[in-house]
Image 1 (cartoon, helix red, strand yellow):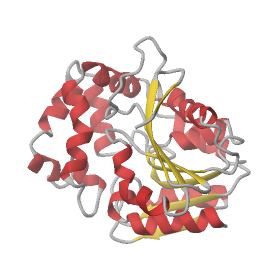
Image 2 (cartoon, one colour):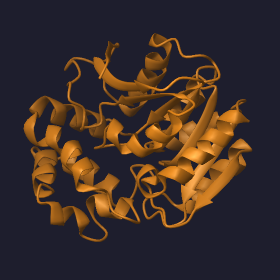
Image 3 (cartoon, helix red, strand yellow):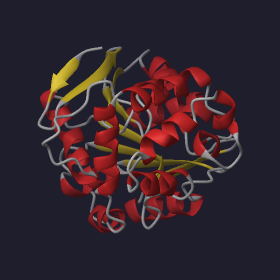
Length: 275
């Protein structure tokens, strides 16, 4: 994978296909592989760029002296797009996390077009279930390592209502979660990055982002899973109303839309990009 040096550290990314640019952004304790099916679909007629962000499943730790927070990570996404020279009409798609909303509120000119697909929003931050559990673990010395080790046995990742199981309607393939958990189990610097990020979380910052988005001037698409147990469907509807955006609701779909409904999400993004 190519790499690029940015203000917080080195970011790896995938860059496939050709045509109009689409940037796909993942959530915590995931990496670019969560988008593999969507990226393969869109690469038929788009340039698809998928960075692995410093959310605990990154292979290259950030510099330990940098200010790592959700807000600086949002800015990092903009810096990443600037460094690659991506055009103003690039389509940014985010799932699970909410940093794209923060970037769009702060730098609307950088986010040409935006797809919010089952994300943190409003007062659901950190999101219930897995998000609040990780936030609590980050406050305890060794807590994040304990969680990563506890999820090492594959059957434990499928316990209903916990961990990755709460994020999907169909279940996350084990080869994906194996890769997502490996850096947290084996690299103390990666764990330190995630702890810094989680400890810097401010419960009010997504409400602040929503206020900033009220005047967002560019096209937006909102996609949500009807069976989402982490990100309330009502928040998708509120975002669509706030932004004057089209709303696509998908059945048999939880938070991880790229896992549950990759083809439907790719088609929604393709239609939005073409429009």
